[in-house]
Image: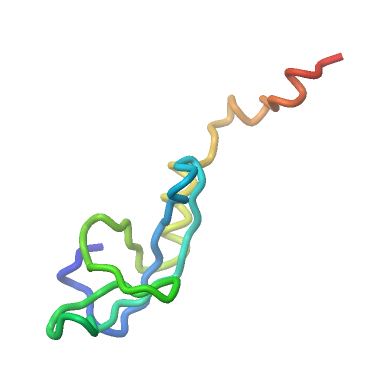
Amino acid sequence: MTIEKLHAGDKVYIIQRNPHTQSVAHIQEAYIIDNPYHPGELSLFFRDEYYPLTDDFAMFPSYEEAEEVYRDIFNPNDEELDFNPIHEVYRL
């Protein structure tokens, strides 16, 4: 999704990482709105905050598209699904 195609009022979905734990992320609904601090510019609004509209955010037009990318990035591959660190440490 390119910034040039966005308009005020558009709803997008972003993948937001936890700033304290980079391996944790979630999909967040956000809105494209007119920037209240810089007339004529757009901003990304989510979690009651305004963010500059930049390519730093991975934005998607639908939750399903965001979820697909999220799964590709954050879900383990099939080999890792059988590994449980608790079971490995406390194996009887």
